Length: 162
Image (cartoon, rainbow, N blue to C red; front, side, top):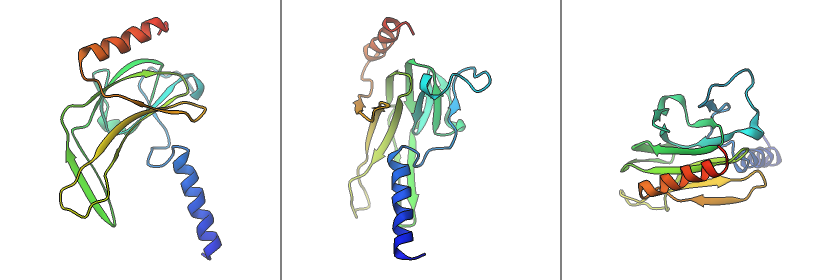
């Protein structure tokens, strides 16, 4: 492949990543009783990340991308996470982390990790939970610190008629 063709391939890959397809499975696993084609992407929320449970249902063996109906969904992260490539790898054992997502139709909810560049044998990772609206606006979602955060999420869902 010549230089221009290689650059075009990189640009296409980067566009796919920016669009949210990078690292996600092609089809989201529905966490509701899906009939036929289901309600459609404009009426469901998509969750991506190292998820252990959603609303107390263990989903870790079902992949990393999930489709949910709008409402409050309580998500716990997997305790052991990691990534690897030809240039290196990392692993982490995490405490119990919970996010109470106020999920809206056509929005994407992403749990991701980043690690500051380090050549040390021990490093640090930063976990974030974000909500991405259909217009591209991204906001950070805080991890739940108490049962009150979960109650607030459920109260929000009730106020929305969900």
